[in-house]
Length: 249
Image (cartoon, rainbow, N blue to C red):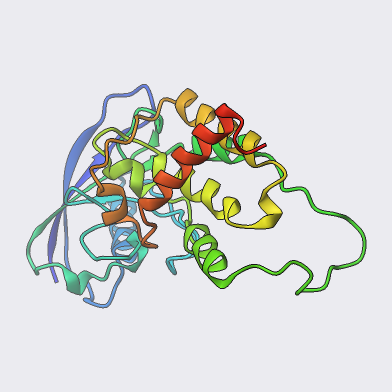
């Protein structure tokens, strides 16, 4: 397979960026798009050109490290998949593929396709810890949790923090990510001790990082590789209002 690639190149957060064009041949249809970028970088290195910087780690759709806007869609057009799960057979041979980094004011470009996602880390840190009694391991059935609540908590907890929701949102909102991290504890008895403090601090940190507000476009859910539901944003908002009005006490 042969492709024309338009890839965003930017040497640093303060530098001007631009789309540069590359041609690449002999691509195996079973390759992932990241493996295709590996081959491109080998070609660039042989030609004396600086390789393209991009994030990746597990390459199994688990870690959330990879994240590219491919032809205008965060993670590409394959539903419920991360960038590393895209196979080149999903693209038309001979086509042009445009690859860009996440676009958000809160995510500065480190280099090329790599962005600084540490604002997510600070939102998580603002939530603090979950209190638990220390000592011997508790019995697994000591705290009974209704299956409905357990399922809702797990549905939120599958968020891998890839930030596709931010990249897809026209407001660059981090509401889906923050909501998932708040909701997963709100359903569980173990998350009740810090319930008020957690939601207030995480929402305030999200705002402080410069993310936009949610306006219910639903693009975040559409591109989320784990299918996180926007109903969690409703959970976050209710938790926040209740915390401020003291109804959780």
